[in-house]
Length: 160
Image (cartoon, rainbow, N blue to C red):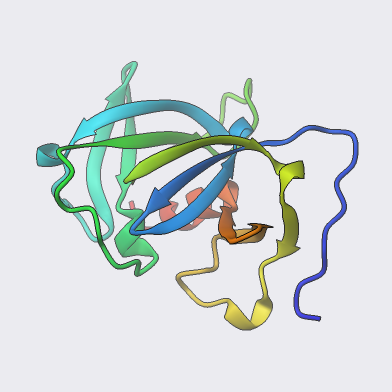
C-alpha cells in the first residue's frame, strides 16, 4: 500500500481548511498567525511566484502566489476580496520564526484532524509542486492535501 494510515492519539490537532483553485488544503492551526482580507487589485505579481510584501505590525511578510507556485489552475479570478493566511514556520514564542502569506479563495473552517483518515502523501506523486504536501486527510468524498508549512517557508526563502 502506497500510503500508510498514521495513528494519532491524545493530542487534539486542529486544521484550518481552505480552497485554492478548486482544491482543498489544510494547515495545522499552530502555524496560523492571522487571517487578513485582501483586495484583488493589490495582488499583482511582483517577482516570480510572489505578489510582493504585506506590512503586518511593522514586519514585511512575503505574499506567495501559491496557485502559481504549485501549478494549480485558477477558477476564482472574479472575487474582489480574498483571504490571506499569515503562517509561521515555528511554534509561538520562537523569535527566529519566519512568516509567509498565502492568498486563498475560500476558508471553509477549522476541523479536528481526528475527523479524517490520515495518510502520508504518496512518494510516487511527489514532484516540485507537491513537495510541500505533508499528507492527505480523507473523509467521505473530501480529499484535503495537508501542507508542511515549515518546509514550504524554507523552500520559498530561496526565491525571496
